[in-house]
Length: 169
Image (cartoon, rainbow, N blue to C red; front, side, top):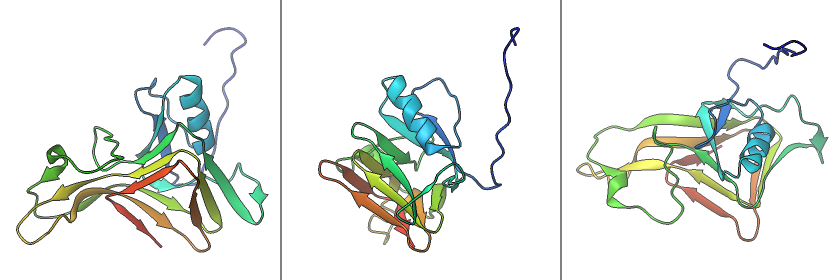
């Protein structure tokens, strides 16, 4: 610390999701909005759910009765299915297929009731796929978005939603 530096504490509920900017400085964010702003400031394009949990809404005001989050054009929100934070927006390649016999959750982003995501950019819910006997491409290690009561995701013109993992709720 330097003379005049300040330390501030941020209190968030247990079970809050944590975000990072892919290929960024490693700084962690509880606020999706802050992570998106950091990505834009660093000319990066991917915000990653680093730790499973609920989307933090405490610093948001209700807009039309919802907690509203916007993914801007040029930004991808990634709910990863692997530690490499693979982003898949256009089909499966052989590198994403495994012979694994069982599936497991890698990361989950939970949307609390009355949460809305408006995507002008992209959302990728990634998964590695299993070609294990009889599985026919079932997700092996997967990302998931779990939507609470009265939640919605709106994809705007030019945005993409790629979900090899799960979106449920």
